[in-house]
Structure formats: structure tokens, C-alpha cells
Amino acid sequence: MKAKIAEIFQSIQGEGPYVGAKQVFIRFFECNMHCAWCDTPRSIGDTQGGFQEYTSDELWRKIADLWSNCHSVSLTGGEPLIQADFIKTFLPRLKAAWITSYLETNGIFYQELDWLIDDIDIIAMDIKLPSSTKCRPFWEEHKEFLEIARRKEVFTKVVISNDTTREDVLRSVDLVAEIDPEITYILQPNYFDYDKGVVQKCLEYQKDCASRLKNVRIVPQMHKFLELR
Ligand code: SF4
Image 1 (cartoon, rainbow, N blue to C red):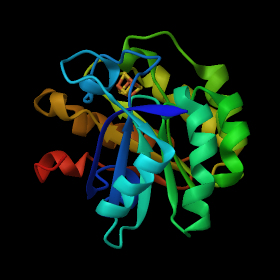
Image 2 (spheres, protein in one colour):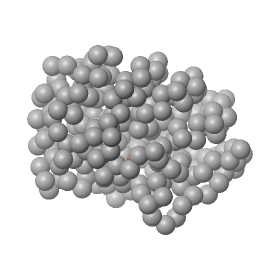
Image 3 (cartoon, rainbow, N blue to C red):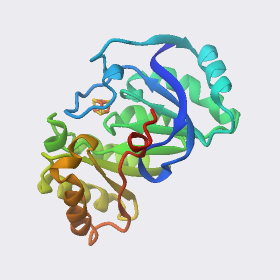
């Protein structure tokens, strides 16, 4: 079995509560979505570059080359759970080597998560707001996903763009609060909309969320500021 992988590299985590942690990133190719502001167009096939195929042994050697005492291996994309069959066979290798696995996902494929979750350590789950993504809503899928994800360490993240509506933000807050108000909820201002007032929007939403959730943070994409991948 082989995985379709867009790129493998070492960098620091740029989003959420683990910002600054050194990681090996495995960027899986393909995504089921087409978010309006997607910042990894290569991984969803929108630009030249495509993917390379890796066997489990080839991927393991690549991680070993890049490891250098990283915090964890990030399985990112694209949407990594599209390749759940490969990941299911690969995660035990990470676990056996005491390497922390960090899944970055759009939070939709809950059946695949249920199948893999025993071997995953940390889950960075997006909640896709339809007013931001311009895609169809996935509220039911996100609810199922978070119910499963809470068995491990999980945090949620929403991207706030110029087009994001308060209604969508409050619906996502309700979704998280009804499952567990202690789950961390990150408001991430869309980097491409900084000159359109999205940071102010995030500050207002943080106030709106505070009565429902205990841990609401505004965290920008730090790798963009640092000009890192
Ligand atoms: S889910 Fe992520 S990778 Fe897929 S289109 Fe949206 S932003 Fe891009």
C-alpha cells in the first residue's frame, strides 16, 4: 500500500495551542473540500506539483531523516483521513517509537477517525463555517467527529474571514459547548483578510463565546508572520 503525499518537511507548528512546536509535517494529497481561502492549493490539486507515492518504509525513513528531536509528527493535508487505510497501517510505527502523532483535519470523516483514534495522540479539528468556506455545512458530521475526538486530546478551530457570519460562529460554539465547554476553541483570523477588519471581528466573537466556552483564544497563523512553511 502507498500513500499519496504532497510534501514532507520539518518546520514549526503555526496554528492553535501548539504554535511554535517543532514538527515533521506529512502533507497528504487530496481534500474533499474546496475552501474559499485554502492556503495549501497544491495539496488539493489546484496547482502544479501534485504528489509522490510513499510506502510505509519510505515514509518512515523520511521521518527519521527529518526528526531531530521534534515534538511530534503532524498528519496534515489536504485531508489526511481520505487516506485512512494507509494511516491505519502507519500509526503503530509512530506509537512503537514513542513519537507523538498530531492529526490536522477538517473534522468530517468521523467513521475513519473512530477506526484510527486509538493510535492518535492529539487532534486539531477544524469546524468549517459555511459562510467562511463557501462550501456546504457539515454540522452533523462535526458533531459526530467531536464526540469521538474527545476521547483523546482535541482542540477546535474556526477560520474567521471577511465573509464569516456571527450566526455560523455561534452555531459552532453551541456545537462544542454541548459536547464539552472545556474543549479549547480557537478563532483564527484569515491571513488574507487582515486589512478588512477580521481581527476586530475575532475580538467581538471572543466576547460572544466567553459565556459558553471556558477556553476561547485568538491565534493567528504564526508561520505566515515568520515566513516559514
Ligand atoms: S479543508 Fe483544508 S486543505 Fe481542504 S480545501 Fe479546506 S483549507 Fe484546503
